[in-house]
Length: 169
View 1 (spheres, rainbow, N blue to C red):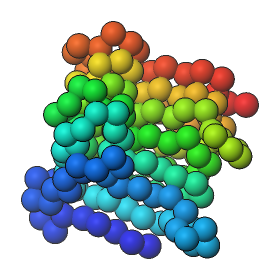
View 2 (cartoon, rainbow, N blue to C red):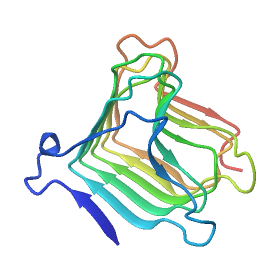
View 3 (spheres, rainbow, N blue to C red):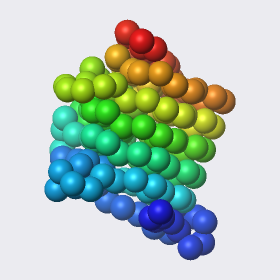
View 4 (cartoon, one colour):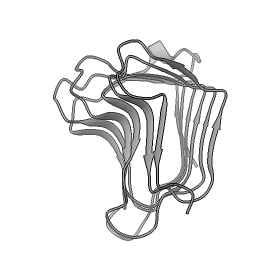
């Protein structure tokens, strides 16, 4: 397992500035190795000055990726598409006790381009704020989406706290 974490436990002591099209990308590595058992704990992800961007892209065959106690702040540009985005198969994504702020949709799962739908996604104890459409948007997900004790602060949004389409098949 690989863990990136703040030594002090304070998310503001480690800041990853995500000013790229995909700030962090968990995708197939060289079509041979896949990202597995990766954790981010008590870190701040911030930035993204462009538009139509995603802060974190969860790609094909990522497995057991954990975000725990982080601040993911993408509120600097209201045109950014999503804080966390995926349209490829992966399993075991867990978001636990994070502050997720900004973008059009805080979490966006769109219909997979090829292959199976993502599965075993768990969101527990997260706070979503400052999104302009949906806090969580899921299309064509596989089995095992668990939402537990999340808080949605709908300030300027025109959409939903949770939007689903064609899930659980």
